[in-house]
Length: 246
Image (cartoon, rainbow, N blue to C red; front, side, top):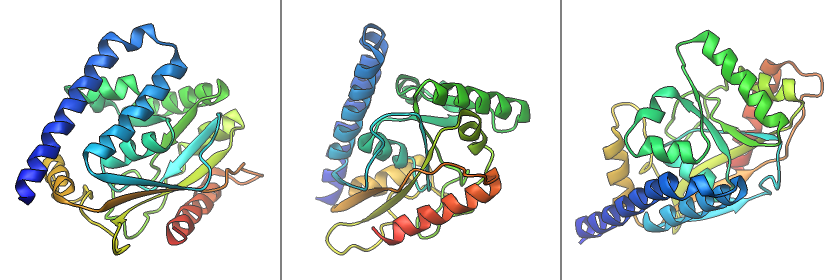
């Protein structure tokens, strides 16, 4: 029964992914940006519903930009969860834009891309982020730089904070957590670490019932004289505290 239920969920997820890609390709070009953003958020919420994941949002998401969201990173599912809580533009590795279907979805959501191995490209993206923040966008990054198992938060890299400093934009910490809705215990089902493949993580998620995705928004901060390394450490602690207070 559990395998049948997981297969049924997978079928519904695949249909939703393909429908989203079709809509981005044929409908989005005719829509204003605000309507695109709203449809991305609605698509993400429906995706969680098809995965049988309940979304809980604590705190206050930003009503408008400019703001840079910084969150801990657990899974491929983090992006869907954050879009469902509040549409934002993510910073992602450049290879994602070339992935079949996924690249289409990422482009439609307004993703900015970076060549991680290139210092020059990193500087270009920071400059572009500063421009988008100055234009009033809500951007999001995972400053750990990789996924963890969700029990701890790795130290934050500080480079991307330079965009917020340059644009004089606030940074808002966000704590992400997956747990069992019945017991409140941490769930490892969506984790995407070590030897996990995307299919492994997806299949575990599809088989799991009562999964809760908790998104906790903290208070937006300005640098207030802090250099980016000090600010990154303070934001890291804020995310740790948000997860502890969920």
